[in-house]
Structure formats: structure tokens, C-alpha cells
Length: 356
Image (tube, rainbow, N blue to C red; front, side, top):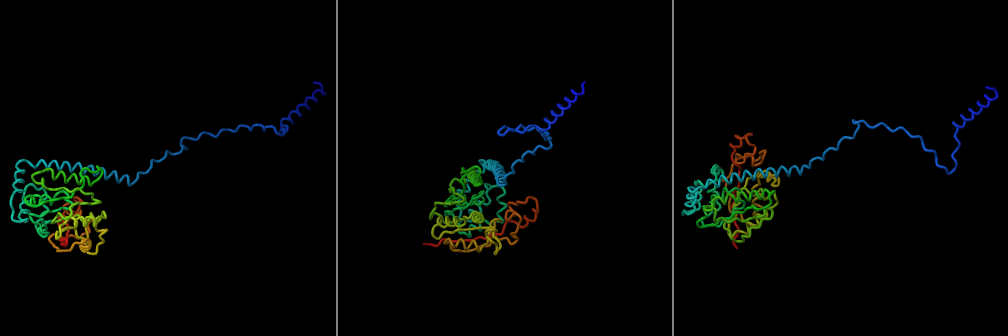
């Protein structure tokens, strides 16, 4: 190639290289050149994925309620099975014995009660409690007569009811309080109402004359003003106080009684210096506190009896009074120890409603 042509080519190549390394400035108002694309970050590995969200923690109150409902269903089923078996016991032979019992003439309430104690109509196992509960001595101390109109506050499973019903069938009157057996199915009060209903239905010959007074446990209204000679509350008062209804129940008892009528209380007795708010949770109440509260409602203490006392009861058991017979809540644990103690130490108090 000619030397002059080669020189021209070299000059042009240099100019082109200079233009490539120094681009011309962007004119005012012109859009900037787009940025060069950047490389996309690598995809996250499976191990780097966020963890699955943990399930919400169970609400302790909701879990407790579920457990209580399950226990209630279990207890209701057991109660119905027991009630059916008990009703089946009342064959024609037993019905005849019951008929003879309620139609018999007895010279005193004590004689009528003793006849009832020996009768086969009693729920199996109930007689085992006689030695600890002294029903004849207790009811005679309260002044029971064959002609008495008696109100049992809190009949429970019918332990006293099955004695009072035949003793009063001829000349007297028995009324018992009950919770509504047709109440909410998720209420334990409904279970208690059903239990008493089943107990009374099994023998019309025995319980046909018993009047059932359905009450609200938290708003007790008896509607029996001045119609009753004797009101009894057997191991009920601690429950009243736990629900803040002690005064309400005592006031209703006062209204139900005739002037001069008797209010009889048997209650698990706490240590004298016990705080009733705490001891009631264990089933016990201090005796002096009970007397003060009942007298504040207008009653007068007419007497005390130690017939149901038990000095072996130390009143400091792991499951409260329910550690002792007949509940024995600890099962086989230390069973012999608690059987040897026996049922609780109890106060037996007789109050009267002043005459007009």
C-alpha cells in the first residue's frame, strides 16, 4: 500500500477510537440514556425460605372450660346409669315394704326415723354413714315432730330425704329445694337437679307427697313465707359463702319459718381462727362466724350439740373436706389414714325465729 494512504487510514482509526471512549454530551431536555441492565440476584435456596407460622397458643380458659364440659358429660352419664339401676331395685316386693313404712303409725319422730333407717328402700351404701351423721339424734335436737312441716335446703343426693319422707308422710309435710333439672345442659346445677328428680321419681309410694321447690342457686327465692316449722341445711353453708350468697339463703330461711320455727344447721367446722373466705374453699367454716352471721339475720341461737363432732379431723387435708369419707378424693393414696379419721368435724346449731 502507498505510504500516504496508510497514513490516512491510521488517522481515521484513531479518530474513531476517540469518539467511542468519549461519547457526546446529552442535549438539554433530552432523556438520559437507559442504564445498563444489572444481573438478577440468585434465587434464594429452599433452606432460606421463611418458616411456617406457628399455630396460635391455646387459650387456658377455653381449655379449662372444655375439660369441665367433658367432665360434666361424663358425670351426667354416670348419674343416669346409677339412677336407672336404683330405680330397677324397686320391684313389687320393695314397693310393698315402702307402702307399709309410710302408712305405719309411730309414737314419735324418733321412732319413725329409726324405722326408716332399717328399711331396704335406702340407697345401698347410705346406711354406712349413719354412725357418723347421727340422723335421729340430730333431727330430734332440732325438734322434729311427726306433724312438722320441714324444708330441706339442698337435698343433694337424698340422704336425709329418704329418711324424712316416710317419717313425715302420714301427718307432716316435707319440702326440698332443687336446681332446675331442665336448665342449661352445660350447667352442673342442671345435673344436680336431674339427680334429685331421678331419686324422687323412682318411688311414688315413698316420695309422692314431697314438694320440690326449684330455686336459682345464685338468687334463691322460696316463696314459702311463714309456712315452715323446721328448715334444715346439712353441710350446705360453705357453698353459700363461696358464691357470696350466705346472707341470701339465711334470709329466705327466716322468711319461710313460722314465728318460733327452728333453723337447724350442720356444717363442717373450721379452726376457730380460720378466715371463712379461705376455709370455705376447703368446705369448712368457723363456728363463731356462722353464729354471728345467722343471728345478724334475726335468728337467736337456741342451742349447740356436739353429736356430730370429730376431734380426729385436723382440717388441713390436701383436697379439703373432700379428702375424707365419703368422697375420699385422693383415691387409694393414704386411704387407710383418711378412713381412720372418718367424716369431718361438724358443728350442729339450732336457731329459732323469734315469735311475733
